[in-house]
Length: 486
Image (cartoon, rainbow, N blue to C red):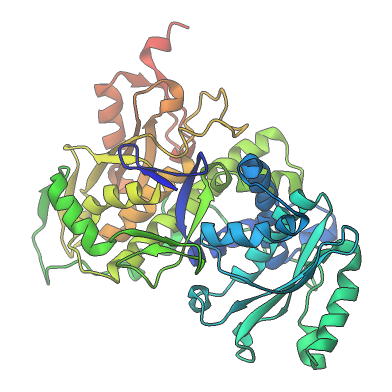
């Protein structure tokens, strides 16, 4: 693993990766995807897919892609390496450390019995960890063995009955035989056996799925950050606003504050742990940046959308996921140390650099109004410039190659989620400059919905940009004035 601090990039095996908080990321992916699939005009079996089946299928697909991407760097000296390579790779990415109990490399009847201890780092955040890891291992193994592998969970410590989680990997056509044999060996009672799902990919719910959820509204405000649930601002009862001009922190001050809240990035493959030294209760996961932004490609294959439908949903899904990630990252950070409003915004740059998003700079024209009165806070304005952005530098997504549109939907959501959480108010965001369109860096504007259009028009007039629809700002398509003649 290498960390290019000059570019705010994390490289694993020559691939750029993003460091994400595991529990929020895994849960938010399925929370966003499930209603879309259930609302699609699909055959009943697909519309009734469960959160587990979607998670398993998505991460299985990622496991296959990772195995293919890293295949030239993984040397297998014997058939056993092909069988256990997924578990080794998972420990490096932060999934977990697994212990092999038994297995066979027979090509037609291969199987692997492995466990994850309850006392491991993952045990505190369990909602979707097991099924996602199972899918990833199944996909990774499928690629290396050339046979469709299935992973199922025999027992889970979330029920409080076991000291570890037990998994079984096997050839798809032989999984039932291996499950029956293992259950007999473990003297498993009927109740525990009834919890086993042989094939998560095909798991469905009884009855129709839930209704379709609305994505972010036209002002890009995140519903989970309403004023009623917003954190109280520091400073007691202040009837008069205090405004701060935001300038980039001095490098020494930024490092001191960063070390206080983050510390060194720790990667311990022998324990399957990825975390920050000062935040050792938070679990993180390395995910290839191309995969982070391609959840919509997986949904497209599942829901059979047209290209135009996919283009629209691409922005909405990534924006929504980014909002959750930004908000959750700041919430987690605040648990490890108090910060006033100004410092919360200033630490955005450090956090994005350490997580692999790129180098963010808060422009000096930004201003923050700190007050208990919402009417005063609405005057806050942020202009953020991002160099070496994770999305803008991605060239493999078919939705971004050769696109004239602004591509950084997830980054835009991350900034929005962080800013709303930091200031305790609903905000709007737009990307008004992007590397994919020839700009030197990506530029984002954030302010309250009420003043957003005014700030946007000032910026557009200043830089000679025109023709921007003022509806859903996450789909802003802006043309530079020099292209007007064309």
